[in-house]
Image (cartoon, rainbow, N blue to C red; front, side, top):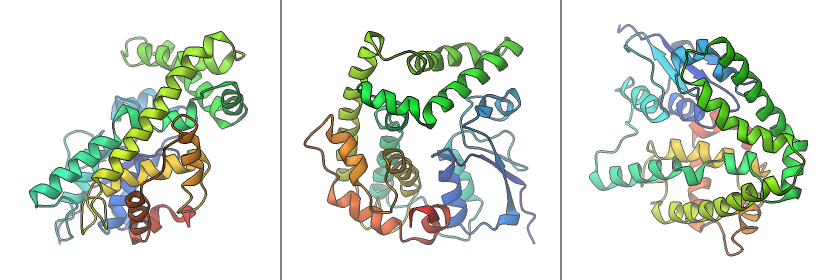
Length: 287
């Protein structure tokens, strides 16, 4: 019997991209005893802990270490490919058909574009009403925790080049969350309004690229396991609670793009992929 590698997945229940790994583990039939999950407190900012940065120097989730790898994998696409390859007896998530593979790659690239960042839905605001709502909810604590950890760990480890630019980047959002809403927020509001228009265009492109019944054709591919975590996170962030609850997110986007509607292909794809065992194992709360 082949000796299984010792695999550790660094994950967080608050991370959308961690579910790329979890969907792949479920789809490929990995058993719980075949890997270990290290939960990282993303909400508490522990993804900036210097010990975690030794594994994942970008401070993002997920990451994967394995006894048969020379160094950690720190990109979700690489983690998916590794988990797929490590299960050669099961159907690969990477199609051999060139056209299907090209479509799959285009879909994966699309949902990782900056215009598709779910931070727009979770953390951004377009006016005082939205900003006040964000500040009164969980997101202010999230932003505050990140800044506190970045400043603390940065002061303790000034030699690490990660901390200074990241502290500055998060600090801009931190200051907006801390201040009373006023003229300093105007550009933030305008940028986010444009951001929602860009998100609408991205979702329209997604719909045009889909080839049903799944995202790239007749079988589930790596593209599905990148789009699913994005969509689940976006729907949740907008207030959706059920598997087909597109309306809250559609309404959010309509505020900036009144003509936006989710495409029928997107809705059909979501219905199809949500019926798969891997989806139902990883996202039971959406049923």
